[in-house]
Length: 229
Image 1: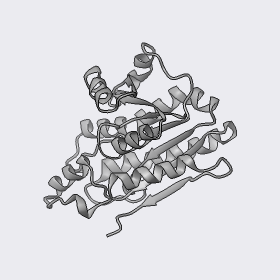
Image 2: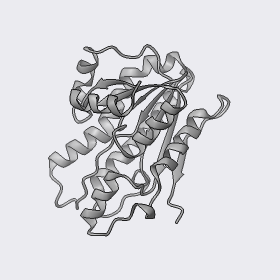
Image 3: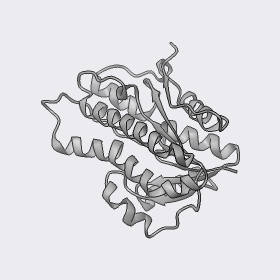
Image 4: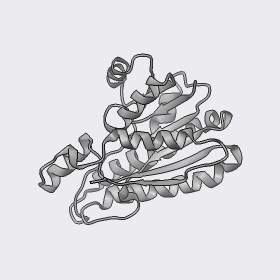
């Protein structure tokens, strides 16, 4: 039985991953922003354990974890949570930039730092569910794309640093995926939203599982997933 820590398990890709891992009998730890959210996740995913820590406050994650029991070892850390607030550079406030960078970049870096000992113990795997915006930036996407470009840099550096410790690192770059975030983005763009037009979260989950299940003689560094329609 493998053990996984997942962020963003409440919906979309994270929820699909949590379901699939539970179905195959793996041990799950789900990160929740507060105690109320932790209870909701525990109800949705019976058998999973929860940790409480607010990704919007990465500087407090160490303190929060210091008051909880962490897993003794982890086979994977799956970074799925993220936020997206679109707007032109001339419109975005420092508050938007700070929240976007905190949740999408600084929190994954800090969370990884905090559980690296457990990952090293098991020759574990860190997966960053990035975005197509982590490879190219369009108008109106500056804050989100900057955070995702930074996430790519974090993954690339971590891969080189931890290779000698047996820790694998994978970045997954999904195109537009049928999640609540995508519905929000369509509202911002003033476009009609049809989830059938975009990638099913299950397809992205399958990609992550492919990377996790790859034999130890190989490693998927980067994989891009695009809508097939």
